[in-house]
Image: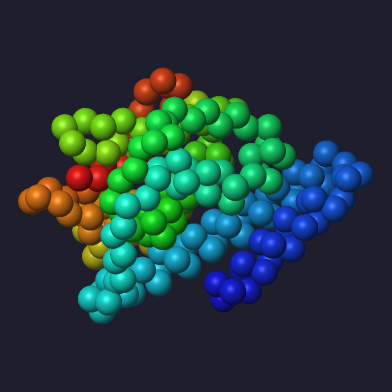
Length: 210
């Protein structure tokens, strides 16, 4: 399924690049298709990781990576949707900043957060980083309406208490929390935070890695 989705996303990319005479409606429809396919692909990655974690087989490859590479990869994956929706992505990150993390797991998790920010943002998203108390903070902020309180309340909910009958299951947050906690260093473990406000007045997602 994942391979088929990747082929579908590549086909949408090629259509967008080769169709120079698209109408506004056609461009928006391609962007929407790209968004939905990317979202489904991310959900499949989450389910696979959750399955592996349950079987105690979640592969972790902790290596030093430049955070700039992580951010650039996220932007590249969503370039079509960003362009077609006319979104502005501002980046506040030191190009020399590097950290020890699992690039694939963290990249997939942050990409899911970015996809949601793109959906609910009015027109601007800020991705920023900072070091606080020897911990890396990666923020993804948007100028949408912010997180609803019921979503903020899901942040510490155990897996068995997730409600799959509602639109917001909390599965993405559980996945984000699981990936963050899998990163440990000197008796510290990673964590996530959800807030409203920040620089843009909308939702603020923060990943904290020791």
